[in-house]
Amino acid sequence: MLKSENTKIFYLWSAQLISSTGDAIYQIALIWLVLDITGSNTITGLVALSAYLPAMLFGLIAGVMVDRYNRLRLMLISNFSQAITVIIIPILLTMGYENVYLIGLLAFIRSSFGTMFPPALNAFIPTIVPTNLLIRVNSLLATSAQLAYLIGPATAAILLSQISLKYLFALDSLSFLLALGLLLMIKSGKQKNAAKPTSHNWHELVTGLKYIKSNRTIGYILGLTIINNLFIMGPAIVGMPILVKDALHGSASDYAAIEACYAIGMLISSFIIFRIGNNFRTGTVLMLGMIIDGLTFSFLYFINSVPVVMGMIIIHALGIPMITISRTAIIQKYVPNRLQGRVFSMIHLAVVGLTGVSSALIGIMADIIHIQTVFLVIGFGAAACGIIGIFYKEIRRLE
Image (cartoon, rainbow, N blue to C red; front, side, top):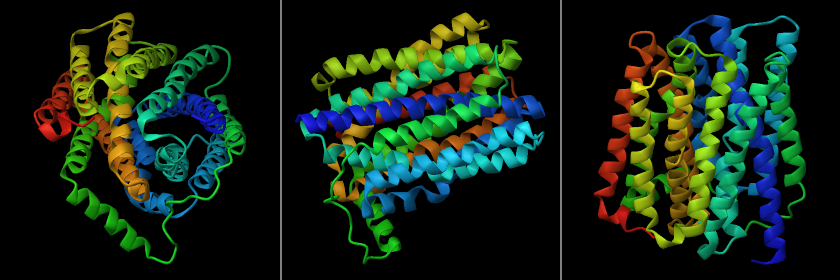
């Protein structure tokens, strides 16, 4: 790659590291705050739903915007808007307003602005990276988020012994502003593949949906992503703090330490993919990742101590980059760049949107069924998605 391309990737990597660290801290703070205020698994699940619902409501429109407008500019707008929104939470808490519904509304607004960022970033990368280097660059960029999910929870675990939970939200706001400063240093130039703003949003949206319908392999990957995330994301977001608090009788610091273990596993996996990922078929790696992702959650049924859960989460996290890096590279390679914003927005909808639904369901289920039994059942369901996909030869053979 050229020096200018390396510089852009460095700024992207650094911006992602900082903002994702803030995201990791925010996620711990939000869920634990609501669980602490209400003591209700159901309400906690519903607040988590509010944080992920925007992807379902606005995700496809965000994809149209990504294909129409300058992608880097949309990333800047997204970061600034989230910074302003999230800082309101600690201000309200300082003033004594512990209204969980207002917190849920702010979480909804923050996520609404954030919906633009992932498809904009993923569609921006192929405009500055050669096709044959996409796997390596995606693996490299993935490490920024994974380091963040080590640094963020570890930072939260340390800070929670020194400062109030509300100050973690201020750190998240600051992280967005710092990331915005790094993104401003990237010169994007004119976006060659942007759609002309003379066509209607609805027409562009339908064009993206028709592409998915006509490309069965991409369509099947999207379908399996939807089902897999319906199983896996609620337990990861809402089920884990409930497991720590109710089943393991742990603290917020225990929860933060377990969350940091995700990063350890993901970093190991991303390094392996970076080194040898081009030696394996991308579609096969994607499906194997789903199998690992699911089965390791099922094993939590048999574990009753925080340290052992931490070890299992490291193993579980090995499968996550296998899924995310492979799926991203497949779309970047096989989908025309002029449509990538819409396709990535559908993936974002499937991941983040279904996270909200799954989180709400897990919150309700955890009030009825023991949380470890929930992990047992959903783990097998998630693994089944990978088993089904690996028998579909068109996916298995994707390079």
